[in-house]
Image 1 (cartoon, rainbow, N blue to C red):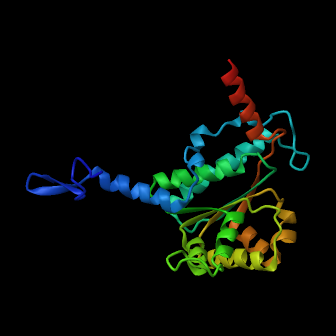
Image 2 (image 1 turned 30 degrees about the vertical axis):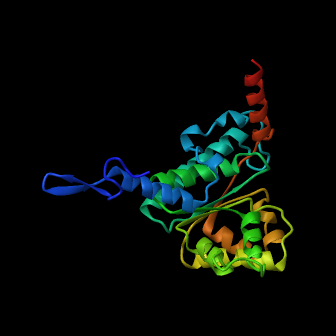
Image 3 (image 1 turned 180 degrees about the vertical axis):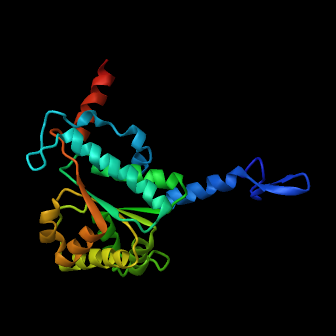
Length: 247
């Protein structure tokens, strides 16, 4: 459907001149969101909606002496700080969010991505296992010529202004998968392009999965923050939703 204001010309005549139609900005935003590959369910994640009620003030981390709530506060502040820094300097250090499944790592990473998309900044969201499967599928001889090549997929992850690598977890990594991840991380480190990564592996154990080269570079370019919960947030939210439906 064409724009009812400008007829898809992109401008509106005003007096003897012309002004840009609001649909231009709307279309640019729609393109940014599509290119970001953000899952639909994550597009509503915002820092304003981040809920600290899932992080206990009484459960204390023995390593730091901080409560789960205080640790979440630090991660939240880091997320807000990153968005502000990225807008001023797109070559700022990235963030590595660690913690068990259901601790809010992906949610917080998506809060950052959505905040920057609203500011018109380019973002690419990639679930690591899915990205690797997509790259691997390019080896299928039955693929049509118009589909993305391995180079297309890897280069998109290398070049994105901000790359979110979700679920850099404890998968069955092979030499092939390690090399692909290394290629992306190493390029972004050399060109000072930030990464927001989430993983259920602690920083000290990452090397056993990703290898020494990738881990070293990831920790060089990302500041690590943990999120700790005593219950899986997704499971808690499911119970809350079911409870509301019963009423």
